[in-house]
Image (cartoon, rainbow, N blue to C red; front, top):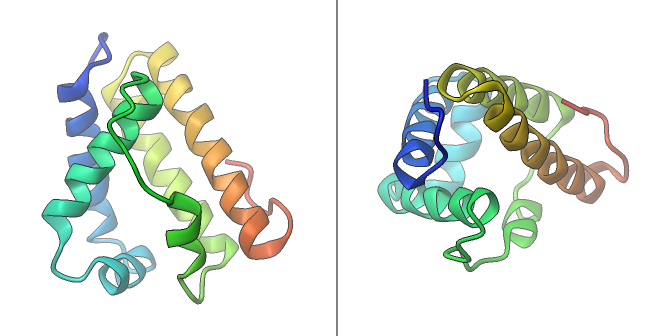
Length: 125
């Protein structure tokens, strides 16, 4: 368990979490459809993204909302599964206070995206 929040710890979270995503029967087709063969680049961007959020590193540059809104066929079940997997990994890898900070950020992001997709938050996390 990581008691310190740093880039290496975030990279572990990203690698473990997305390994589960790639095995998940609901999420894997969505992610593979969007990412294709570019998983290494995506994982690097996700490390930058979470470092920007959790460490205020400002490493990530991109349009998260726009990229996600371009995806078709997204439903509440996708958010439920994504948040559930993220919750499990954050709690397994980090001390409770750090895990809660990750989860608060993930819930905010998920809520914003759900407003874009559904006009409301169906899955609070």
